[in-house]
Structures are given as structure tokens and as C-alpha cells.
Image 1: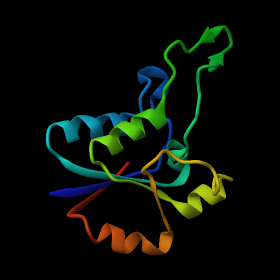
Image 2 (image 1 turned 180 degrees about the vertical axis):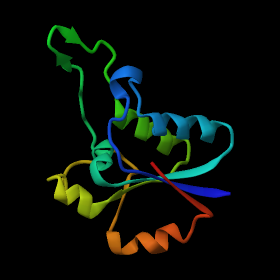
Image 3 (image 1 turned 60 degrees about the vertical axis):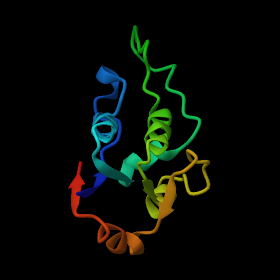
Length: 126
């Protein structure tokens, strides 16, 4: 069964767990043999941008000692054969249309989404 996971909510639980829960779950399931790909849309397109650094994250006197490194998580997924797509219009809406993305992330237009989704047995939306 081939599954496309649509990730829309960004940075969910990244302070507590230092990983996006769905990207972590995807990596674990892929390691167990699942056939999964990921579509980043809305605020989650930020995950596709290379060179992010959250090492200065602090709230009052509290400092995050193990900040998330989402671009590395995305790159690891690609290395495991997971296709990662980012909606081009969502990137542009956030001023990231020309930003350098993690190698291997594919930009897709909204108009092509029905065709892309048609190639999967299931769609999981997070």
C-alpha cells in the first residue's frame, strides 16, 4: 500500500521532542518497510528550506539545548527513498519561493495535486 502523508501543521511538538512527530513516525515506518511519501503544504513548507538553525531558541530564562533540525530530518527521509514534495504556491505565499531547499525536495503546483494524489492508495492528512 502506497501512502502520501500531507503535513500541514508545522513544528508540532518540536520543543518537547526535538523532531516533528509525523516526520519521525514516517522515518520509523519507512524503516519497518512502509511505502510512504510526504507532501509539505501550508506552514509545513518551511521544513523544506535548507540551512535553518534553531540553536538560539529561548523563552525567558529557558534555552532549548537540543533544538530541532527539521531540514536534516527531511534529508534523512529522502536518503531512505521517501519522496518529499512542497507546494510551490505555499512557499511563495511565505516569501520562500526562491529559497534554497533541501536537496531532493520537489516543488509541486497546486494544480498538479490531484494527479499526484491519484498515484497513492491512501492519503493521510496531519
